Amino acid sequence: MNNLFFLFFFLFLASAAASVPAHNITRMLAKHPGFSTFNHYLSLTHLAEEINRRQTITVLALDNAAMSSLLDKHLSLPTIKNVLSLHVLVDYFGAKKLHQINNSTTLVSSMFQATGSASGTAGYVNITNLKAGKVGFAAEDNDGSLHSFYVKSVQEMPYYISVLQISAAISSADAEAPTAAPSAIDLISIMSKQGCKAFADLLRGSKALPAFKENVDGGLTVFCPTDSAISGFAPKYKNLTEAQKVSLLLYHATPVYESLQMLKSSNGIMNTLATEGANKYDFTVKSEGEDVSLKTKVNTASIVGTLIDQDPFVAYKINRVLMPRELFKASDALDQAPAESPKPAKKKKNAKKGSEDSDAADAPADGPSDDSEDQKAADQDSNGVSGLHVRLVMVLFGLIMGFLVL
Image (cartoon, rainbow, N blue to C red; front, side, top):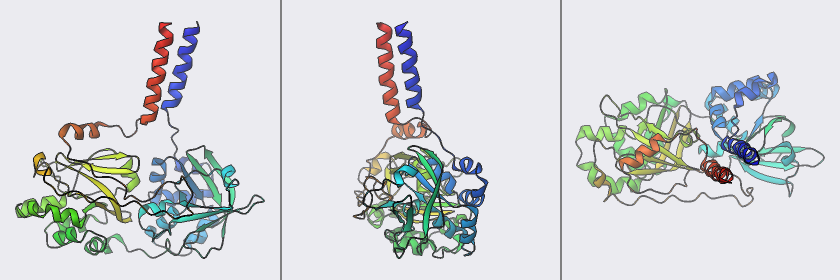
Protein backbone atom coordinates (compact mmCIF):
# COMPACT_ATOMS: atom_id res chain seq x y z
CA MET A 1 0.00 0.00 0.00
CA ASN A 2 2.82 2.37 0.92
CA ASN A 3 4.54 1.64 -2.35
CA LEU A 4 1.33 2.38 -4.25
CA PHE A 5 0.90 5.65 -2.36
CA PHE A 6 4.41 6.78 -3.23
CA LEU A 7 3.88 5.74 -6.83
CA PHE A 8 0.85 8.00 -7.25
CA PHE A 9 2.52 10.77 -5.26
CA PHE A 10 5.60 10.86 -7.48
CA LEU A 11 3.54 10.51 -10.65
CA PHE A 12 1.64 13.60 -9.54
CA LEU A 13 4.89 15.49 -8.94
CA ALA A 14 6.27 14.40 -12.29
CA SER A 15 3.14 15.57 -14.07
CA ALA A 16 3.28 18.92 -12.33
CA ALA A 17 6.97 19.37 -13.06
CA ALA A 18 6.63 18.45 -16.72
CA SER A 19 3.90 20.97 -17.44
CA VAL A 20 4.68 24.64 -17.88
CA PRO A 21 1.66 26.94 -17.43
CA ALA A 22 0.71 28.18 -20.87
CA HIS A 23 -0.66 31.67 -21.19
CA ASN A 24 -2.63 33.39 -23.92
CA ILE A 25 -2.72 37.16 -23.55
CA THR A 26 -5.61 37.50 -26.00
CA ARG A 27 -7.84 35.19 -23.94
CA MET A 28 -6.74 36.78 -20.69
CA LEU A 29 -7.71 40.27 -21.86
CA ALA A 30 -10.90 39.05 -23.56
CA LYS A 31 -12.35 38.57 -20.07
CA HIS A 32 -12.00 42.31 -19.51
CA PRO A 33 -13.94 44.38 -22.12
CA GLY A 34 -12.32 47.55 -20.83
CA PHE A 35 -9.07 46.48 -22.53
CA SER A 36 -10.60 45.48 -25.89
CA THR A 37 -8.75 48.14 -27.91
CA PHE A 38 -5.40 47.27 -26.33
CA ASN A 39 -6.10 43.58 -26.97
CA HIS A 40 -7.01 44.30 -30.60
CA TYR A 41 -3.74 46.11 -31.28
CA LEU A 42 -1.66 43.42 -29.58
CA SER A 43 -3.08 40.97 -32.14
CA LEU A 44 -2.88 43.39 -35.08
CA THR A 45 0.82 44.07 -34.46
CA HIS A 46 1.60 40.39 -33.71
CA LEU A 47 2.85 41.32 -30.25
CA ALA A 48 0.33 38.88 -28.78
CA GLU A 49 2.15 35.98 -30.45
CA GLU A 50 5.49 37.09 -29.04
CA ILE A 51 4.01 37.55 -25.56
CA ASN A 52 2.52 34.05 -25.65
CA ARG A 53 5.87 32.54 -26.62
CA ARG A 54 7.70 34.13 -23.72
CA GLN A 55 7.97 33.05 -20.11
CA THR A 56 8.62 35.54 -17.29
CA ILE A 57 6.97 38.64 -18.71
CA THR A 58 4.92 41.63 -17.57
CA VAL A 59 2.30 43.36 -19.73
CA LEU A 60 1.45 46.94 -18.79
CA ALA A 61 -2.10 47.09 -20.12
CA LEU A 62 -3.93 50.25 -21.21
CA ASP A 63 -7.70 50.54 -20.91
CA ASN A 64 -9.82 51.82 -23.79
CA ALA A 65 -9.62 55.45 -22.62
CA ALA A 66 -5.80 55.36 -22.45
CA MET A 67 -5.64 53.67 -25.86
CA SER A 68 -7.94 56.34 -27.30
CA SER A 69 -5.49 59.02 -26.19
CA LEU A 70 -2.63 57.09 -27.81
CA LEU A 71 -4.55 56.61 -31.08
CA ASP A 72 -5.35 60.33 -31.19
CA LYS A 73 -1.67 60.83 -32.09
CA HIS A 74 -2.40 59.14 -35.46
CA LEU A 75 0.70 56.96 -35.36
CA SER A 76 1.37 54.39 -38.07
CA LEU A 77 0.83 50.73 -37.22
CA PRO A 78 4.59 49.97 -37.07
CA THR A 79 5.02 52.91 -34.69
CA ILE A 80 2.10 51.74 -32.54
CA LYS A 81 3.85 48.39 -32.32
CA ASN A 82 6.99 50.10 -31.04
CA VAL A 83 4.99 51.99 -28.41
CA LEU A 84 3.10 48.92 -27.23
CA SER A 85 6.26 46.81 -27.17
CA LEU A 86 7.62 49.34 -24.67
CA HIS A 87 4.72 48.25 -22.44
CA VAL A 88 5.87 44.61 -22.40
CA LEU A 89 8.61 44.07 -19.83
CA VAL A 90 10.88 41.04 -20.13
CA ASP A 91 10.79 40.35 -16.40
CA TYR A 92 8.06 39.37 -13.96
CA PHE A 93 6.46 42.06 -11.78
CA GLY A 94 3.35 41.17 -9.82
CA ALA A 95 1.55 43.80 -7.74
CA LYS A 96 3.39 42.69 -4.62
CA LYS A 97 6.81 42.89 -6.26
CA LEU A 98 6.10 46.41 -7.52
CA HIS A 99 5.63 47.67 -3.99
CA GLN A 100 8.75 45.89 -2.78
CA ILE A 101 11.18 47.62 -5.13
CA ASN A 102 14.24 48.55 -3.10
CA ASN A 103 16.02 51.89 -3.47
CA SER A 104 12.77 53.32 -4.86
CA THR A 105 13.53 52.67 -8.54
CA THR A 106 14.65 49.92 -10.92
CA LEU A 107 15.37 49.80 -14.64
CA VAL A 108 13.79 47.00 -16.70
CA SER A 109 14.25 46.01 -20.35
CA SER A 110 11.17 45.98 -22.56
CA MET A 111 10.34 44.11 -25.74
CA PHE A 112 10.99 47.37 -27.62
CA GLN A 113 14.62 47.15 -26.53
CA ALA A 114 14.70 43.53 -27.70
CA THR A 115 13.62 44.47 -31.25
CA GLY A 116 16.80 46.41 -31.88
CA SER A 117 14.74 49.44 -32.97
CA ALA A 118 15.43 51.36 -29.76
CA SER A 119 18.35 53.78 -29.73
CA GLY A 120 20.83 52.88 -27.00
CA THR A 121 18.84 52.15 -23.84
CA ALA A 122 15.67 53.97 -24.93
CA GLY A 123 13.82 50.65 -24.70
CA TYR A 124 14.28 50.44 -20.92
CA VAL A 125 11.51 51.40 -18.48
CA ASN A 126 12.06 53.00 -15.08
CA ILE A 127 9.73 51.68 -12.38
CA THR A 128 9.60 53.98 -9.35
CA ASN A 129 8.09 52.93 -6.03
CA LEU A 130 6.60 56.16 -4.66
CA LYS A 131 5.37 54.44 -1.49
CA ALA A 132 1.82 54.73 -0.12
CA GLY A 133 0.76 52.21 -2.78
CA LYS A 134 1.75 54.42 -5.74
CA VAL A 135 4.12 53.21 -8.45
CA GLY A 136 5.17 55.22 -11.52
CA PHE A 137 6.49 54.19 -14.93
CA ALA A 138 8.67 56.18 -17.37
CA ALA A 139 10.72 55.43 -20.46
CA GLU A 140 14.49 55.75 -20.10
CA ASP A 141 14.56 58.38 -22.87
CA ASN A 142 11.88 60.46 -21.13
CA ASP A 143 12.67 63.66 -19.26
CA GLY A 144 12.30 61.80 -15.99
CA SER A 145 8.75 62.95 -15.36
CA LEU A 146 6.27 60.27 -14.33
CA HIS A 147 3.03 60.42 -16.29
CA SER A 148 1.90 56.82 -15.98
CA PHE A 149 1.00 55.04 -12.74
CA TYR A 150 -0.01 51.60 -11.52
CA VAL A 151 -3.80 51.17 -11.31
CA LYS A 152 -4.45 47.51 -10.52
CA SER A 153 -3.49 43.92 -11.21
CA VAL A 154 -5.58 42.41 -14.00
CA GLN A 155 -4.25 38.85 -13.83
CA GLU A 156 -1.09 37.17 -12.55
CA MET A 157 0.42 33.73 -13.11
CA PRO A 158 3.48 33.75 -10.82
CA TYR A 159 6.15 33.76 -12.04
CA TYR A 160 5.34 33.50 -15.71
CA ILE A 161 3.13 36.38 -16.74
CA SER A 162 1.63 39.40 -15.02
CA VAL A 163 -0.90 41.78 -16.57
CA LEU A 164 -1.01 45.12 -14.77
CA GLN A 165 -3.13 48.13 -15.67
CA ILE A 166 -1.37 51.49 -15.84
CA SER A 167 -3.09 54.86 -16.11
CA ALA A 168 -1.62 56.13 -19.39
CA ALA A 169 0.71 55.14 -22.22
CA ILE A 170 4.39 55.46 -21.37
CA SER A 171 5.76 58.43 -23.28
CA SER A 172 8.85 57.83 -25.42
CA ALA A 173 10.09 59.99 -28.27
CA ASP A 174 12.15 57.10 -29.57
CA ALA A 175 9.23 54.64 -29.66
CA GLU A 176 6.91 57.24 -31.21
CA ALA A 177 9.37 58.26 -33.93
CA PRO A 178 7.92 57.85 -37.45
CA THR A 179 8.77 54.57 -39.16
CA ALA A 180 8.82 54.03 -42.89
CA ALA A 181 6.29 51.79 -44.58
CA PRO A 182 7.79 48.36 -45.42
CA SER A 183 7.78 48.99 -49.17
CA ALA A 184 9.69 52.25 -48.60
CA ILE A 185 12.48 50.56 -46.66
CA ASP A 186 15.89 50.80 -48.34
CA LEU A 187 17.28 47.30 -47.76
CA ILE A 188 20.68 48.08 -49.22
CA SER A 189 21.11 51.23 -47.13
CA ILE A 190 20.14 49.53 -43.87
CA MET A 191 22.56 46.65 -44.46
CA SER A 192 25.38 48.96 -45.52
CA LYS A 193 25.12 51.16 -42.44
CA GLN A 194 25.01 48.32 -39.92
CA GLY A 195 27.95 46.06 -40.66
CA CYS A 196 26.63 44.18 -43.70
CA LYS A 197 27.93 46.41 -46.51
CA ALA A 198 29.74 43.58 -48.28
CA PHE A 199 26.54 41.50 -48.45
CA ALA A 200 24.59 44.59 -49.55
CA ASP A 201 27.08 45.20 -52.36
CA LEU A 202 26.65 41.62 -53.61
CA LEU A 203 22.88 41.96 -53.48
CA ARG A 204 22.85 45.40 -55.11
CA GLY A 205 24.05 44.18 -58.48
CA SER A 206 22.35 40.78 -58.37
CA LYS A 207 19.21 39.42 -60.01
CA ALA A 208 18.22 38.28 -56.50
CA LEU A 209 17.41 41.83 -55.34
CA PRO A 210 13.91 42.03 -56.96
CA ALA A 211 12.82 38.91 -55.03
CA PHE A 212 13.83 40.59 -51.76
CA LYS A 213 11.91 43.76 -52.60
CA GLU A 214 8.81 41.90 -53.78
CA ASN A 215 8.48 40.08 -50.45
CA VAL A 216 8.94 43.03 -48.07
CA ASP A 217 5.24 43.96 -47.82
CA GLY A 218 4.03 40.36 -47.51
CA GLY A 219 6.64 39.26 -44.98
CA LEU A 220 10.42 38.93 -45.20
CA THR A 221 13.21 37.82 -42.87
CA VAL A 222 16.77 38.48 -44.02
CA PHE A 223 19.96 37.00 -42.55
CA CYS A 224 22.93 39.23 -43.45
CA PRO A 225 26.46 37.86 -43.05
CA THR A 226 28.89 40.35 -41.49
CA ASP A 227 31.54 42.05 -43.60
CA SER A 228 34.27 39.84 -42.13
CA ALA A 229 32.23 36.71 -42.93
CA ILE A 230 31.82 37.80 -46.57
CA SER A 231 35.52 38.66 -46.80
CA GLY A 232 36.56 35.17 -45.73
CA PHE A 233 34.01 33.60 -48.09
CA ALA A 234 34.93 35.69 -51.16
CA PRO A 235 37.11 33.04 -52.91
CA LYS A 236 34.27 30.49 -52.81
CA TYR A 237 31.74 33.06 -54.02
CA LYS A 238 33.88 33.93 -57.06
CA ASN A 239 33.94 30.28 -58.13
CA LEU A 240 30.12 30.09 -58.33
CA THR A 241 28.21 30.55 -61.57
CA GLU A 242 25.89 33.56 -61.87
CA ALA A 243 22.84 31.35 -61.27
CA GLN A 244 24.46 29.81 -58.19
CA LYS A 245 25.31 33.26 -56.82
CA VAL A 246 21.65 34.26 -57.13
CA SER A 247 20.58 31.09 -55.32
CA LEU A 248 23.11 31.71 -52.55
CA LEU A 249 21.84 35.25 -51.95
CA LEU A 250 18.20 34.11 -52.00
CA TYR A 251 19.16 31.43 -49.48
CA HIS A 252 19.74 34.21 -46.93
CA ALA A 253 16.09 35.24 -46.76
CA THR A 254 12.80 33.57 -45.97
CA PRO A 255 9.40 34.83 -47.25
CA VAL A 256 7.78 35.18 -43.81
CA TYR A 257 8.19 37.55 -40.90
CA GLU A 258 10.07 35.86 -38.05
CA SER A 259 10.73 38.01 -34.99
CA LEU A 260 13.58 36.97 -32.72
CA GLN A 261 11.10 35.55 -30.21
CA MET A 262 9.45 33.51 -32.96
CA LEU A 263 12.82 32.11 -34.00
CA LYS A 264 13.65 31.22 -30.40
CA SER A 265 10.53 29.11 -30.13
CA SER A 266 10.27 27.67 -33.65
CA ASN A 267 13.09 25.12 -33.80
CA GLY A 268 12.82 23.28 -37.09
CA ILE A 269 13.33 23.42 -40.83
CA MET A 270 12.76 26.73 -42.62
CA ASN A 271 12.35 27.29 -46.35
CA THR A 272 14.05 30.23 -48.07
CA LEU A 273 13.54 32.44 -51.13
CA ALA A 274 15.77 29.96 -53.00
CA THR A 275 13.43 27.03 -52.24
CA GLU A 276 11.79 25.82 -55.45
CA GLY A 277 10.57 22.36 -56.41
CA ALA A 278 13.25 19.74 -55.85
CA ASN A 279 15.70 22.43 -54.78
CA LYS A 280 14.99 22.47 -51.05
CA TYR A 281 17.49 25.15 -50.08
CA ASP A 282 16.39 24.97 -46.46
CA PHE A 283 18.13 25.23 -43.10
CA THR A 284 17.30 24.38 -39.50
CA VAL A 285 16.68 26.93 -36.78
CA LYS A 286 18.01 25.88 -33.39
CA SER A 287 17.75 27.92 -30.19
CA GLU A 288 19.34 27.48 -26.78
CA GLY A 289 18.09 30.07 -24.32
CA GLU A 290 18.73 33.46 -25.89
CA ASP A 291 21.07 32.05 -28.58
CA VAL A 292 19.72 31.33 -32.08
CA SER A 293 21.72 29.45 -34.71
CA LEU A 294 20.99 28.49 -38.31
CA LYS A 295 22.22 25.04 -39.32
CA THR A 296 22.66 23.96 -42.93
CA LYS A 297 23.91 20.52 -43.92
CA VAL A 298 27.31 22.15 -44.43
CA ASN A 299 27.88 24.76 -41.71
CA THR A 300 26.32 26.73 -38.86
CA ALA A 301 25.85 30.47 -38.37
CA SER A 302 24.68 32.40 -35.31
CA ILE A 303 22.52 35.50 -35.09
CA VAL A 304 24.70 38.22 -33.58
CA GLY A 305 22.45 41.26 -33.91
CA THR A 306 19.25 42.80 -35.25
CA LEU A 307 19.49 45.36 -38.05
CA ILE A 308 15.79 46.24 -38.16
CA ASP A 309 12.56 44.72 -36.89
CA GLN A 310 9.54 46.36 -38.45
CA ASP A 311 6.76 43.84 -38.99
CA PRO A 312 6.39 42.45 -41.65
CA PHE A 313 10.12 42.94 -42.32
CA VAL A 314 13.07 41.99 -40.12
CA ALA A 315 16.79 41.67 -40.81
CA TYR A 316 19.43 39.99 -38.64
CA LYS A 317 23.22 39.98 -38.70
CA ILE A 318 24.84 36.52 -38.77
CA ASN A 319 28.49 35.60 -38.26
CA ARG A 320 28.93 33.20 -41.19
CA VAL A 321 27.77 32.89 -44.77
CA LEU A 322 25.11 30.15 -44.94
CA MET A 323 26.30 27.36 -47.23
CA PRO A 324 23.46 25.24 -48.72
CA ARG A 325 24.12 21.58 -49.47
CA GLU A 326 22.85 22.16 -53.02
CA LEU A 327 26.00 24.19 -53.70
CA PHE A 328 28.61 22.98 -51.21
CA LYS A 329 29.96 19.88 -49.48
CA ALA A 330 30.62 19.55 -45.75
CA SER A 331 34.36 19.67 -46.44
CA ASP A 332 33.95 23.14 -47.98
CA ALA A 333 33.23 24.56 -44.55
CA LEU A 334 36.48 23.34 -43.04
CA ASP A 335 38.57 26.06 -44.62
CA GLN A 336 35.99 28.79 -44.12
CA ALA A 337 37.40 31.84 -42.31
CA PRO A 338 36.74 31.98 -38.55
CA ALA A 339 33.38 33.50 -37.69
CA GLU A 340 33.20 36.92 -36.11
CA SER A 341 32.85 36.64 -32.36
CA PRO A 342 29.70 38.30 -31.03
CA LYS A 343 30.31 41.22 -28.70
CA PRO A 344 28.52 41.08 -25.35
CA ALA A 345 25.71 43.58 -24.89
CA LYS A 346 26.52 46.63 -22.81
CA LYS A 347 24.30 46.83 -19.76
CA LYS A 348 23.34 50.01 -18.00
CA LYS A 349 24.89 50.22 -14.55
CA ASN A 350 21.59 50.75 -12.76
CA ALA A 351 19.76 48.09 -14.74
CA LYS A 352 17.91 45.65 -12.52
CA LYS A 353 20.07 42.67 -11.67
CA GLY A 354 18.65 39.49 -13.13
CA SER A 355 16.62 41.22 -15.83
CA GLU A 356 16.65 39.48 -19.16
CA ASP A 357 19.20 40.82 -21.63
CA SER A 358 17.45 42.13 -24.69
CA ASP A 359 20.40 42.15 -27.10
CA ALA A 360 20.43 39.35 -29.63
CA ALA A 361 24.19 39.58 -30.15
CA ASP A 362 25.18 36.86 -27.79
CA ALA A 363 25.34 33.63 -29.75
CA PRO A 364 28.74 31.93 -30.16
CA ALA A 365 29.68 30.45 -33.50
CA ASP A 366 29.27 26.71 -33.88
CA GLY A 367 31.52 24.46 -35.89
CA PRO A 368 30.45 22.63 -39.06
CA SER A 369 27.50 20.34 -38.54
CA ASP A 370 26.66 17.05 -40.19
CA ASP A 371 23.37 15.64 -41.43
CA SER A 372 22.62 13.85 -38.18
CA GLU A 373 22.92 17.05 -36.15
CA ASP A 374 20.59 18.88 -38.52
CA GLN A 375 18.09 16.08 -38.34
CA LYS A 376 18.15 16.13 -34.55
CA ALA A 377 17.46 19.85 -34.56
CA ALA A 378 14.67 19.44 -37.10
CA ASP A 379 13.04 16.72 -35.06
CA GLN A 380 13.15 18.68 -31.82
CA ASP A 381 9.68 19.62 -30.62
CA SER A 382 9.64 23.31 -29.73
CA ASN A 383 6.53 22.77 -27.62
CA GLY A 384 8.06 20.03 -25.48
CA VAL A 385 9.01 20.33 -21.85
CA SER A 386 12.26 22.05 -20.97
CA GLY A 387 15.45 20.12 -20.27
CA LEU A 388 15.14 20.88 -16.56
CA HIS A 389 11.71 19.31 -16.42
CA VAL A 390 12.87 16.27 -18.36
CA ARG A 391 15.72 15.71 -15.93
CA LEU A 392 13.37 16.11 -12.97
CA VAL A 393 10.94 13.58 -14.41
CA MET A 394 13.80 11.12 -14.94
CA VAL A 395 14.90 11.53 -11.33
CA LEU A 396 11.36 11.00 -10.09
CA PHE A 397 11.00 7.96 -12.32
CA GLY A 398 14.12 6.50 -10.75
CA LEU A 399 12.70 7.09 -7.27
CA ILE A 400 9.43 5.44 -8.27
CA MET A 401 11.25 2.35 -9.54
CA GLY A 402 13.22 2.26 -6.27
CA PHE A 403 10.05 2.23 -4.19
CA LEU A 404 8.51 -0.46 -6.41
CA VAL A 405 11.53 -2.65 -5.81
CA LEU A 406 11.01 -2.20 -2.07
